Length: 130
Image (cartoon, rainbow, N blue to C red; front, side, top):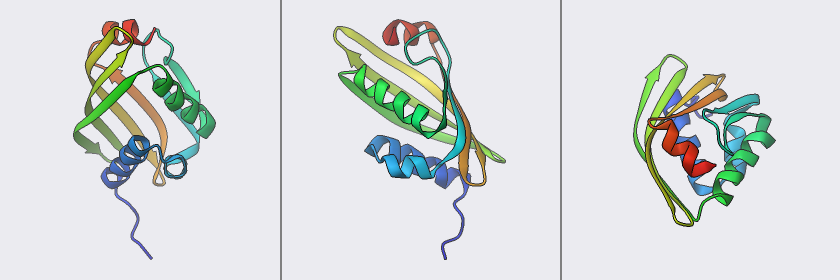
């Protein structure tokens, strides 16, 4: 039997699953009642609930971009919460976005219960995703 994942290991595993488009691994790491929240006023903003809501959100982000590159900088941990600092570079037609983001994940029993993404520059993010 494998020992349980630490929240840092689980965070890396979720990051890799999303990057790889591995839907089954993403589902494994999300609580059934997950709330995936994105700040701002744009097509991705708001609460996305449950596995299907999160997967729809991820699919929409992919559909709205011609190219998207996420670069993990570091992971901070405090008890059952991790914060991922990362860079996002994306193109959408003539639009370009380069922004620093913080992803806050609350973990319960080895699964994400709540997620918030906070861009360093909300106005730039809203312009790009609107």
